[in-house]
Amino acid sequence: MTSKVSSPSEPGVKMEKSIGLLSCISIIIGSVIGSGIFVSPTGIIRSVNSIGASLIIWVVCGIFSTLGAYCYAELGTMSNRSGGDYYYFLDAFGPFWAFLRLWVEVIVARPATLAVIALTFSKYVLKPIYPDCTEPELPSRFMAACCLSRFFL
Image 1: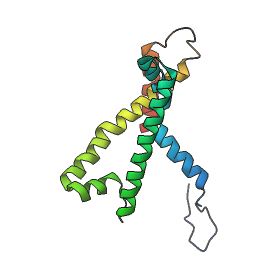
Image 2: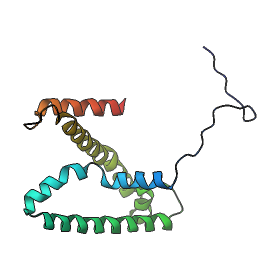
Image 3: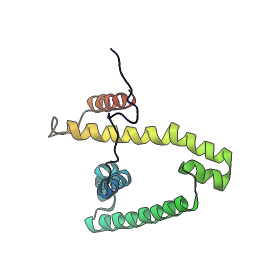
């Protein structure tokens, strides 16, 4: 099997930018909301025993999230380098804390986030199979492990 790389003058496969404003907004909203929207409402309602109070909590948390996004946008406009959190920490605290922040993200935060998303996915997939009871732990964890192994392959 041979393959030929096309030169710039020859017609061939060309990647085009296809993300628009609506797609960007959807990606950002999906990143902010995440899977927590499917997990946390029941815990909040159980804790406060009031739908009105839980809505107030959601609004206050939304305001804090918006303020955090504004701060992050301000950091992005102040720095002329790309690299996100690493360069923000590098500029503010020095190389040790920037390195430590990066490794905490890689070793702790991202894997924990992926585990929560996989467990949430498995609970929602298994709910129709076990409609009248809670999902058993073993199938739920097995499905989450399959999702995670598929992600890392």
